[in-house]
Figure 1 (tube, rainbow, N blue to C red):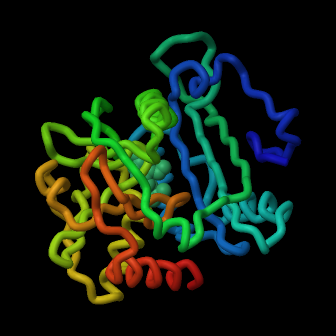
Figure 2 (figure 1 turned 180 degrees about the vertical axis):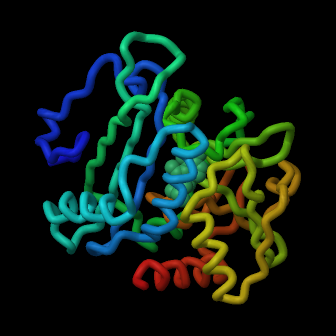
Length: 276
Ligand code: PMP
């Protein structure tokens, strides 16, 4: 069962118009929200980011916080609380009269579904992952969690072809983020991540990693990272709702430390935040 435009329907019966602007133009925004043992993680933060993104794209927010929560809970009732879940929520501008870029006031199309979330356990994460550094060729509104994900799709293809987990992106030798994650480096015990800007998505996990550093008393900064600083870093981590805090063992041919006491401390603190 999924939620589409006010109704709970079987996925196979969930149909949208070919004139939906999400289908035609990728004219919409989305959210991915993890649910740990039945508890929705950082719900406020996700709904606030959704509201901000709808504001940036001039799409009216169709539901209140309470209404979203009720829909999520109905969908989550389908699953056992023993498993982790993930909520996928997409809102497009709606269905136009014909295919044209301009739009009048339309009723947004809302699609929400839940799936089992397979997060990597600590021992798996600790082994570290591989990545590749690539030029960031995306537009300059990466702060908007837009459903127009062609660049991300192509980066994922590159990563798969190279047999690596993620692409790390740079604009003019300044690190922005991963293809679908935020980036942290650790140098001499200091954790640094690029500051929020139009060039990165303000990841909810990123905020939680910074909060974990704060709680654990680890020095952390939001500052630009050059490619040279990346290559010289002791550790590199990526974060996202589905990856949590993933240490990178290498980017291309450069290796980094993994499963260090510092990573462990931040990881452990992050786990405690999940349970509050
Ligand atoms: N940056 C990009 C480009 C992403 O697609 C994502 C998540 N899919 C993130 C960062 C991480 O965001 P979050 O921690 O909210 O999952």
